[in-house]
Length: 497
Image 1 (tube, rainbow, N blue to C red):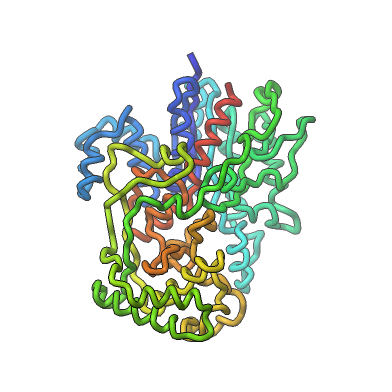
Image 2: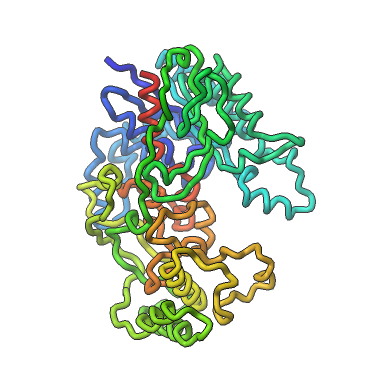
């Protein structure tokens, strides 16, 4: 009988890595299940706990689908299924890794997992990335008193290493932003220190790249080899992340690797593919949000674009057709769903759930009238030229009234996601505004909904994000694509077999 592996998920966010590994672990020939998830954000913890509760059943309970399909609130799970809810509360812990006393508390659970599963554990997670990301570093440079060496976020990976050292799992997977490769502290690169610490933790680990062939001599791969391009693995998003796989030394010596751990590349999946099957929506208005008022604003913005001589004729022609249209979308939210048009049957199956008859969390934001014109122009430009326009390419009447608009720092301020290619990286910034995530249809004049962003991140359609909409966006943007995590989970479990 195959040995079951227990998963410990650190800095879990809304559960992208955990969802993928859990789905991979449902295979009877290679079982894995989450033993412990640790996350600090309250709403992400609620999301994790709900998903942990659902996974405690062989099939999700009917009451879950009754609520989703009818748009009603969930029942009191604690009262309805007390034993299952208690298991979920035990599995998911709201803790701040690095805070005093947290490690000692978790150490008890880590020791229990290691002993109960006879060392057959897997550690996954991604320490917070704000100190490493290119955007975060640019923001920090603008702070007069910022000292990288005093930024504790640079060293949160050590909490991961500390737990790795205690748990001594058979394997670990650590994810972080591309900027970690070039981030420097104390005059040196942080990434080489991370690799040294991971390699030396516990009983020692062999570090493997996922998308490149590991060195035949057993040595360490080049830093750039740990970079994963998600779009190469069937993800509808150009998300480039550092992902390090470690195999414990007593197991690594038995490995025979004749190619990349993740295998060959997959055909690209586009934005248009990923968000197909969801109803058209209109954007909202920040004031006087009524359908007729919205249509008047859209027509006025379209007419202004159509009459602007400095705009390309094909964009103006599209604007004229929008100005004269009578078939505008009227709803800001929709639960209707139709068949997807994905060329990847595996990914389509990943999204789908035959018991789910509605589209979840598919509701638009409200925008100011000027932004509706900017969104329309950007989407029309992208449709015509295959790329989003730079800010300097917007006509003057659509330019934002920002004093620093000419600085060049905001050239990509309004960015449409091209329907014909994978999206740009979905980040937590999507929770602040939709300017970087404009829907490809010029007539809808809006940013992506939570569910559309979740599709680009490959969350299954039955995945519910807890909290207000802003928090839902934040969770989606902070996650590892679950379908990528599923592929990693399958590959890791095969190596351990």
